[in-house]
Length: 69
Image 1 (cartoon, rainbow, N blue to C red):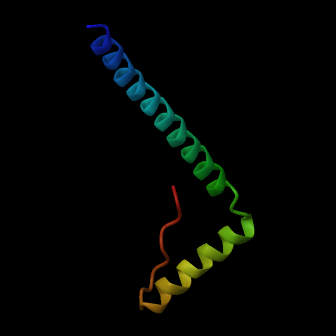
Image 2 (cartoon, one colour):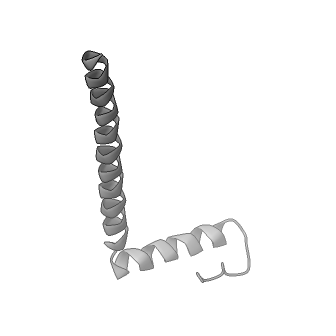
């Protein structure tokens, strides 16, 4: 009986560890991605916007794309 209780406790605690480690890894990846997205310089933003306008005009559209909200 004690072996079964010990086995159940070990199996349960392993899942708790897996869930918490997984949550921390996911949180870390989310923080990293957010910081990486914030690292875009104003020059990169300007070049991206200009490239979008160039592609839009290249496709034969006459009106400018709407600005971001």
